[in-house]
Length: 438
Image (tube, rainbow, N blue to C red):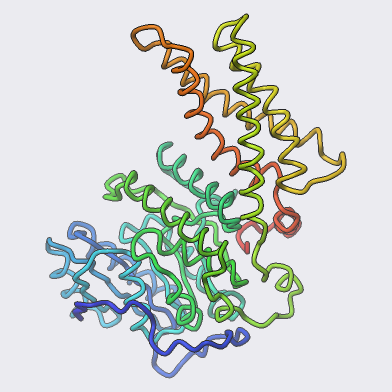
């Protein structure tokens, strides 16, 4: 199947809220599950991986299924191999798109599919396929609306290098701090969604690249939909062609765009909401987490005052000590004041309860800022020539701006999490089930 102009939205999208969840109707000759495999120039791995996926589903999946190969404008032999698999295996379909973009491929194929449960996975099959049935079972039963594989739960088993591990955890920390996301792993290429949810949700998703599924998850969570998490075993593909720097840059732009839209109320999330179910936690978690715009304003005001205090202290200490000592003392004192001010003014925490703990966590965040600013000073000192006092201040201001962004994310996600986030974490610990997480 060849598609020259992929649709930008799913047709016939009604405006009413979603009905209550019901189990998927099984039977009638239609597949229950459609697994999409987006590919671009994957001639080396495509046939082997699709046949492996096909064999696994034929042996273990109890309902009808389909595998759809979504070719994103490949220029090698990928279209030829996909067409051959389409002809050879009855449950395999090949779709050709003339434009690149993982999000574009998923939106297009999911909009064409008649299956009530839609999934996708990366062609390298880094995720253990034994997690596929646990991934989609809650969607078939009507328990959940979306499902994701997570490499970051305690019971997950992951083999990958430190660089990718750091990038993944840092990205998810940014999502928690900036968009109040509670799902643990946005980037794992192993996700599923109910068709009725996709019909309402995907028209609201703007991205057509790698940020597509992150945006989908954030909007789903904000609309109160239930997201089921499955711990997975995952082995990194050393031959992955993903461009990390470009992808990270695009993702950060997406975070800013979605955060701005949510803060201004520009997204009509009402049409994606479901009626409350029997679980009282639905009522607690269905609302939109609030306070981000106010917190950003408060944090910026406190940060600006703290920076001014820091610079004054640094200039005073610099009269009698070296730059490293002056920086450490000024940063320590301003950090204590910054934590106390943010505790009261930005995050609305009053009283003495956990005050010492908050200051201890604030000092840990201070340590990160110290490392950034001290490293900047060390680099400046190692440069040729003798830097002026003005140059020192300029370097410190730049380093502090970077430290400030990270400080806000850590304050919001770790030091001063909302009561709802603490309650959700406590519920997860009580249930001893890290795999089923809103």
